[in-house]
Image (cartoon, rainbow, N blue to C red; front, side, top):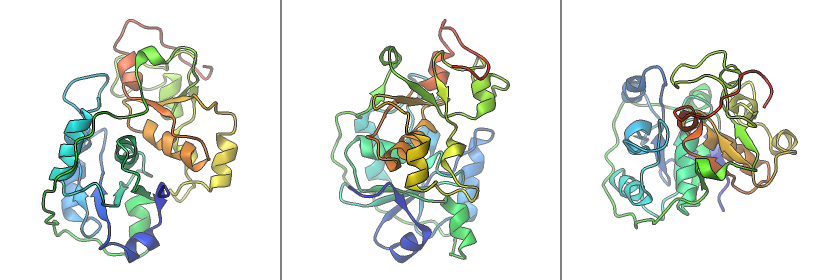
Length: 267
C-alpha cells in the first residue's frame, strides 16, 4: 500500500508520472478557490470542486457523499484511471484534500497520496506554479459499488467519536454554518491542527502514535460535514491504526435533528 503522504521533493521528481488534483476550498467563499487555482497551481494539476465533484446535492449533512458509481464517473471525467497514482493537495494542511484521499482509499484505489505541507510548502521550496490549465483526456474508470468505512448516525452508539473541528467550534463558542453550536454528546475534541507541525506538515509518525495512543480501534472520526474528519483518518493511519470509520454527516447532520448538543470542554 502506498504511503498516505508524498513530499514536495518526491512530487517534483515524479510530476509527469502521477495525476495531481488541486482541492483548494474556503468555507467563507467557495468560489475563491477556483479563481486562485486559475491564477497559480502546481503544473499539471486539475481543479476538483469539493461541493460539486465530491459531494451529492442532497443527503446527510452539508457535504453528503455521492454514490460510489457517481464518484468513479467523476474520476474518469477528470482524467484519472484505476491504474494511476493520484496526488491531492490544498492550502490548508491537507484538511480539504484528505476528503478525496479517503474517498479514493474507500473504493480501493490504494495509490492515492496527499502532498505533505500542500501548496504552501511547494511554493516555499521554490518549485514552479503556473496559470496554464492542463488538458487531461477523459478515461473510463470501472464503476465502484460502494464506499467502505462510512458511519451513519445509527452507528455511533457505544463507540468513541473523535471531533476534528477547531476547539472553539467544539465548545460551542462559534458556529459559522450549522444550526446549533457545540458538539455531539460523548465526542472528544482532537482538532486537525493538532496533527500538523507549525510549518503545516504532518507530525512525525512517532508523534502521531503518541497523540492517538489512547484512541480505540473502533473509533469514528467526525467534523462539521465529513471533510476534515478524513484528515483525522489519515493521521490515524500514519499513527499505525487501521482506517477508522468516518461519520460523513458529522455535526451538520446531527445538529439538524432534534438531538442533544453539548457545549464546553467536556465530552
